[in-house]
Length: 77
Image 1 (spheres, rainbow, N blue to C red):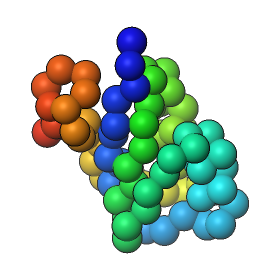
Image 2 (image 1 turned 90 degrees about the horizontal axis):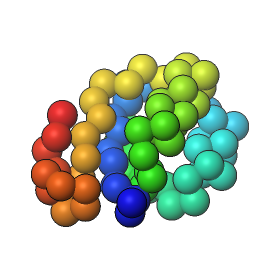
Image 3 (image 1 turned 60 degrees about the vertical axis):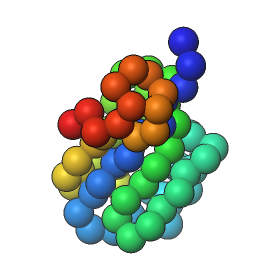
Image 4 (image 1 turned 120 degrees about the horizontal axis):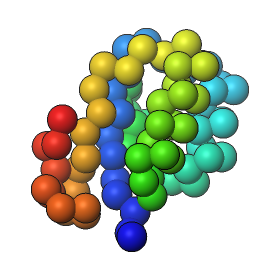
């Protein structure tokens, strides 16, 4: 199974340590204001990312699939 790009929208900002842990975990991580876009292999990896965000004190507002990978081609809220 290929990797799917996901967009995770959070309220607030991550501290440097939380950001560094997410970058280490996912390699490619783009951050624009409070929107992060990264690749995950499966639901377990997505749940791990969400747990890291919670541990860093972030409030997740929205998670959605982006791009054309994994079936629906984006917008899957």
